[in-house]
Image (cartoon, rainbow, N blue to C red; front, side):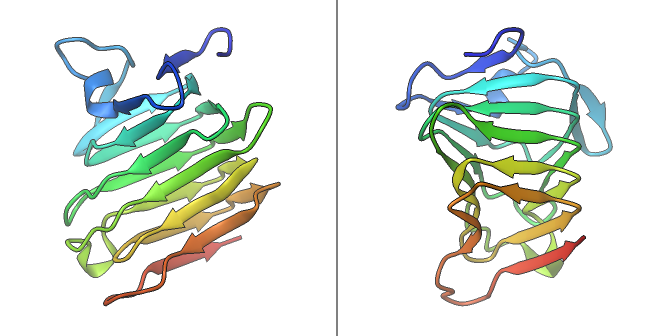
Amino acid sequence: NQNNCVNIGTDINSVTLLSDLVSEDCEIIPHTPYLFGISIENLCFSVEGTLIIDVPQVFFNNTHWYMAPGSTIEVASSGIWGGRYFSNSHFEGCTRMWRGIVVKENTSALFANGGLSLFNTTIEDAWRGVELENYTVLITNRAKFYDNYTGIYTVEATGQNNIIHTEI
């Protein structure tokens, strides 16, 4: 655990839903309404286990993520209009590699909607920086992948291929 960070999970077997952390009943992560979702800004996170991003529209801006060995961020299927955005953010492992960000299959992701967007964001020290299951979308702009075993990994396509759009 890092000082002055929001701690998520207690060990490698922990599974935490983002929706539980931003719930009005028990808000653990401060956020503000943004467009059709929420915005989380200027925070540091220390993750152990799996964090499932199950909020359909979430914008992370200027966030820093310390990932424990083997930990994962899982982007859950979000329907036709869902999207998870990381801007000016940084992911890094603590002492050993972490699993990476896994974008789960989303058969509702029509017209290149739904998935993961990385803008000026760095992912490092991961086994797979981003892993895309079928029917997923990845958009990057000035994203950096450092010291990962694999930067972007796609599973063998069964049906619709993944959409990857990247700009330097």
